[in-house]
Length: 317
Image (cartoon, rainbow, N blue to C red; front, side, top):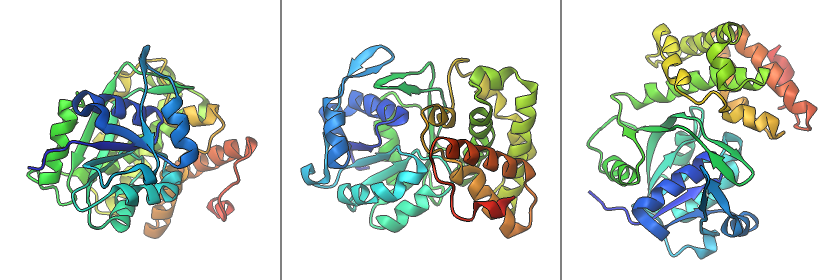
């Protein structure tokens, strides 16, 4: 099994900061951010706070790389993936292992196309309640990574090497029997929790206690189950009920990433959630009225603070 000695993180948001900070435990100063020139300088000079503890990180542009890195962690939003592919290519080589903690069901396929010589693992991040405000990151639960190889081989050398360094960094890892089911399960969870929280402006406490919010969440997630089944993924009705022990374990004051985006007037990941689900539903002839309503509600919110609606979105009505 290959030993990992270096790691680079792309994306200095809540998850990027959390995993970069953890990886420094095992790899020290061989952990850094990779960004375009305008961002690299800001990250390097920033004074971060992680649960009240001061933190700082090095950041480089592709020109500053000495060669491919051992581990590459992607922690950006889905709509930024095209922008960061040049960074991915600059840091990747035949021995590089890539892990994407992006939401949705498509990032790994995009990475496989971009860097076919590298090892792309399939991964989801679950049960964390990280909130980043300015340069301050707070969380009560760091969650865990559910991670696997495309062919679900638990003895995959790249998988074992990545899990080893992550666990040495204090990151809890789980290798499921079917990573593709796990990816769709997280997509289902986001379709419910992220979209409803952002639509109503509710934190985790609201989602934990509001029966009305839960009814909408359940409806949205059941539509995701039907679409996943049509795609050949083994999601089930009981998976919808199974999200509540996780949800109820999160800090009441925590916020979903989509709610944080709406409050900061940033573009949301609605296209990767209900937008993608609607596309797949139309392919299979499945009715998804709850997600159509959430899609329109969220794109309307975005348009109020200056985000342009995607082309053709009115055809979803």
